[in-house]
Length: 102
Image (cartoon, rainbow, N blue to C red; front, side, top):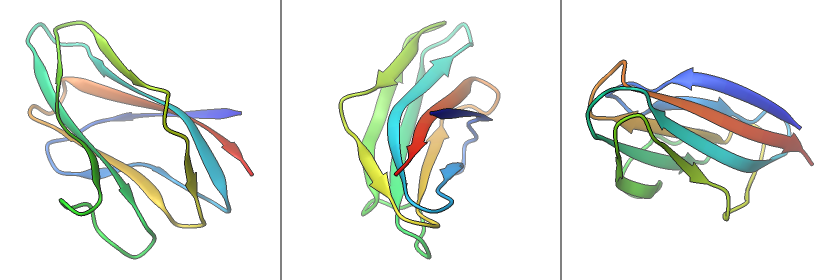
C-alpha cells in the first residue's frame, strides 16, 4: 500500500493518477484552517475532465481543523484514471490518498 499527499486548490485538480491498475483504499480531506471548508471529490476516467458527471462527493462541509475520511467506497482505477478534488479556499485543505496496485 502507498500514499500520496496533495494540497487541494479551488480548481478541480488531480490528487492521484493511477499508473497501471490500482484500488483506492481511503481518501482523507483535512481542513487545517480555522474556518469550515467545502470540498468536492471526483473520480475521472482517463482522458476526461472533472465535472458534474464525474463528481462523487459534492459540497462536503469540513469543520475547522477536522478531517473527512472516505473509506467505504473502493474505487478500482485503470491506467490514467484519477481522483480529483477542489475546495472553496486554496491553502486550507490537504488530501491524502491511500492506494494499492491490483
